[in-house]
Amino acid sequence: MESKIISEIRKSLAQSVDDKTRDTAQRFFKETVKVYGIRTAIVTKIAARYYSGIKHLGKQDVFALCGELFKSDYMEEAFIACAWAYRRRDEYQPEDFATFESWLDKYINNWAKCDTLCNHAIGSFVEKYPQFTANLKQWTASPNRWLRRAAAVTLIIPARRGKFLPDVFEIADRLLLDDDDLVQKGYGWLLKEASRRHQSEVFEYVMRRRSEMPRTALRYAIEKMPADLKRQAMQ
Image (tube, rainbow, N blue to C red):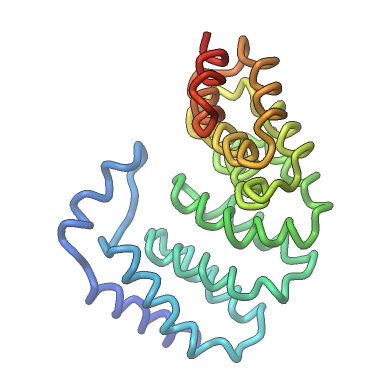
């Protein structure tokens, strides 16, 4: 059954290729990406259509299918895997963290895959089991740039709702001097989202750290702030 489902998905993806999307995909990435070239809305529909045929399966069977999709390295298959994993969020158990961490370490190799998996599936997991923020903090020291970025972007949606502020600041501190621009953008984005509900606290944090914080991260962090606060932060 597994091979049949994957085969059918790949056939549908191959039939949905858009030449313009394929030809322009690479310009959004510094690293080489493997794509069919399919618009995101179409990938979303394919993910939903095929999920209807597997939703009766147990969570671990669905996760096994996700792993097979990730292995192909195609961006669109990774997006389907991320969508399916997120659909099982009501069933998450603590032991699922090891699966998510394994996917990140083995299969995530660009910012789009990283953010799609972390913003939704892993972010929902950490909201359900907040003790795993300790693991996110461990990721900040990883030699894998995507695990370091994941440490920040996993909390994007909870931070937007005002949650995890002390953890947001601790993760930002741990990543503060990271020399990878995609990691800088990741924690800068996290601070920006936290500022939606905690503007004064994030502004104070930025002002304390601005002499050390890379300009890339700083600009992201203050993006949603009023013009006068931006001017102060950039002086």
